[in-house]
Length: 91
Image 1 (cartoon, rainbow, N blue to C red):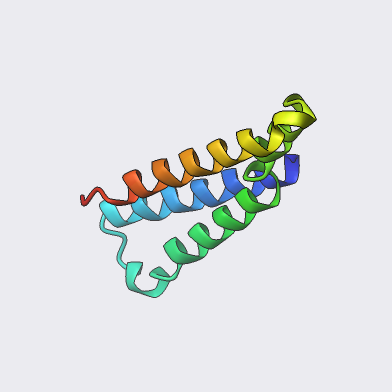
Image 2: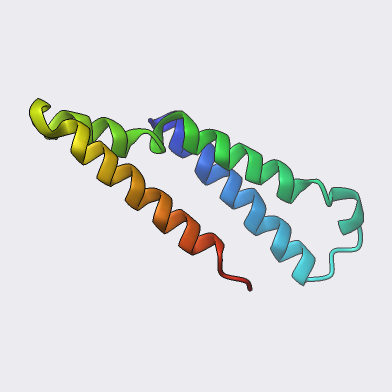
């Protein structure tokens, strides 16, 4: 989990540095336009390694076996609903 969080923190640091350089009119910004995409991919990979599956793991450990199927269904539907709601916003 520490490795996952390290990758996520490193990716956000690099992304922040890129936008800082862009805001300060760094003269060679065109040659490093690939950094935001790479940082995003590293962040998503780090999140998927450990931080993403934790809610699923914790839920299967704390809910009793007789009702785990119903609760997993409710949990999955609510996560999908929240994800769809968040992705509907246009900025």
